[in-house]
Length: 296
Image 1: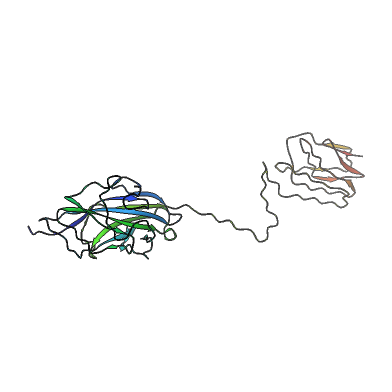
Image 2: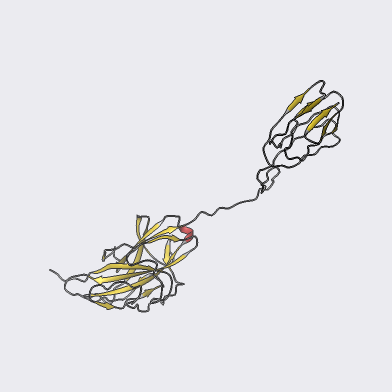
């Protein structure tokens, strides 16, 4: 069997932005990040463990480069994470120290891999860790600072990640595929109506909207706002001596009153508001208090 150097991405963990050794883990090792809020841009660290899984205990080259790629929603193929990539970018404003060594974290770290631990690198510059040699029968950890771009993501989008070697596709093994699924709420925008003439919202048990009163000769007319629903009554008589509507729980909003000679019309504020719709009267007619109609 021919000996070969083969690095493999074998474990991962997501963290909030922070220092390399002090950042807070978002979830356990090898657990995907779900429902990540991206109503604004979101900072995330992705920590990888890379093992040398080839045969023959072969070292990598001193010029080996490791880059991070992503694919959105499982289509379109993988693209490099850079400072200008569309959906996720290198977070150049992170707390990491670009190019500095990683540590074998004692708390909230990643489990040990093959052989001894070899310090990796922190990346928040351009997305690529350059000139890093992984020795045979060893493992290392690299940390990428990521920025999820709110403007380009929609609710339930997911991003899958992989590590590549020397520009390959991927040129190494990836036995795990970290995934970030995002959550993004709907923003409702309310605009004012330029010319609002007949629309009104009232903080009451009912909404009062329209009143119509027609008088040929109205000395006094009054409408009183009450809570609720319209009911119309029509009374017509050539010789009406007395008409009365009994108390009910009906409260009226639409009124139409017509009279040849109406001296006074008033709708009285009572516990039960009585509605008279149309009156055609001979002689004098009037509405009086107490919920009745008297005509002489």
